[in-house]
Length: 223
Ligand SMILES: Cc1cc2nc3c(=O)[nH]c(=O)nc-3n(C[C@H](O)[C@H](O)[C@H](O)COP(=O)(O)O)c2cc1C
Image (cartoon, rainbow, N blue to C red; front, side):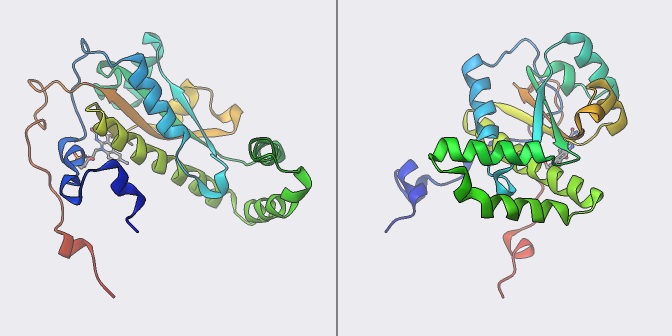
């Protein structure tokens, strides 16, 4: 049987990953070029559909639309221009604690969506509680933050498939972004940022540069 993914391609010859070769981490966006609400919704959905450990989705995504907050965020991002030039700016904030409420919500949500009795999910709930309780504070923060990177990767890939540009961004002062969005009091902390928009080919020195990557031989090892 053919792998499922082939259903989306006519043949393996079409699987050239052209969109991944086209994308790059954009430094300068064309702020006059907007992306449609439909495309923004597609980005949001790609993040929502991202798989996470135990399905807990231990993060929130803040969409920064207010120009005043954008300008403060830019300062907290070492003045990187993407923050004010890109049409969509998403701050991924990961949970620093997983509360009983968080776990209960997940169990209830699973029961509702899959039409299952809560009691049948008791072993799953115990498993989550046990997993979470064994993590140190730092390990939990690390685990939560890692989940946001899966969403980041999927969103970037989907943006590229739509022919939309994006930039993953770790260049920020975490305390400043946390304060700007009042994250500490919500048991959240800034994990990573994603800017989405249309590249400004004239201004971006990276727009026509070839990709720098290891070869497959350097990156993979058969054992
Ligand atoms: C997690 C992560 C954080 C990054 N942070 C920044 C950033 O703050 N600013 C920036 O301009 N590029 C940032 N980059 C872009 C990388 O430098 C870029 O992805 C890498 O050099 C590969 O190039 P390409 O994405 O253009 O193919 C980041 C990339 C990743 C994956």
